[in-house]
Image (cartoon, rainbow, N blue to C red; front, side, top):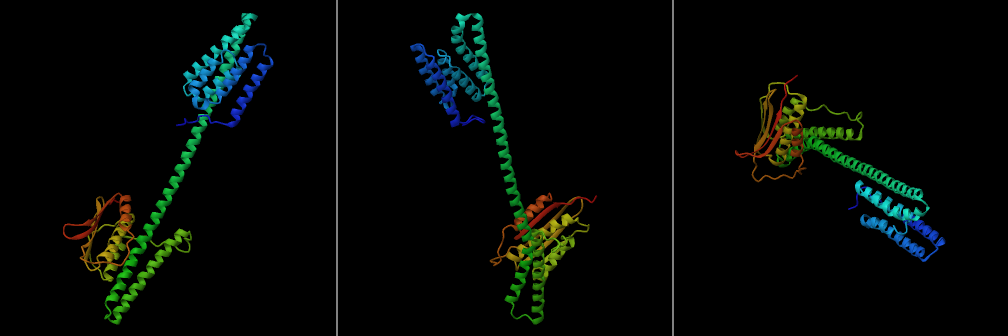
Length: 378
């Protein structure tokens, strides 16, 4: 696995190393005075070619090249080997040891070469080699640190961009789910009532004219209300709130009205309302959606059964909402189910800090029961 900020291989760098090595080799050939100089030129070319393998085997190759460079004392090999090791090693101690090795391997032939000219020149050569090695190592470590820092910044930017894209996608999904839930809550109840009333007309062809007119009027009123509410939601989505103002949010009286409308549609449902205190609007809206979804499911799946809605609670305790019906036997429906109604009210109740359960009971009923905290008025 490639380390963060590790140097990459570039062709221009390889070409530059070859050019420097070839130029130094050419200078050795020009000033060659013996066979040993020819051997040194050949060894220099071999070491220069070995430098091209530094990317894969740098940990052991570069120190070996420094040792092999001692007989010929190639300044190019010395600088390139130390610099390349410093740019790759993350251990400063190892970099320091390699720098010391470079000084030793470079100082021995330099001291031997300049010893005949006097101790002062020999010491000067040692100082120069030390300075060259120190500069190469320091430049390599600086390059390594800068490259790692830039890689970290790039990685953090990519992670931030990826996180932002993920957050945006999650926000879009949440918004789509919220819109779908609102559409379901607003339209499903009304449409189920329309289907229920139309079905009653279909199976009772002997109804009197007055009853037919009453049922048709109820269908028209319910459908008109559903279309109006649907238009309001679509208007909000389009942003033309002035043309389609939002309808007032449900209140506690609207919760009771849900039961009345279901009774008018032919559902046998009883209301047990034990609420004497004023219910906050936010709590009333949550209760409205719970009762609405419970009655909608009864319209769809338990048309001919007896149902009941119970509302119990007081400020400072909890509001308990129970919507239940006798389990039907063999009843089927043609009304499609979005399978998101109960999921939607579970989300609403959870956001209100409450809990909700649904399912068959021991007394042969299907019950939706929500328990929501009812804070005291401040």
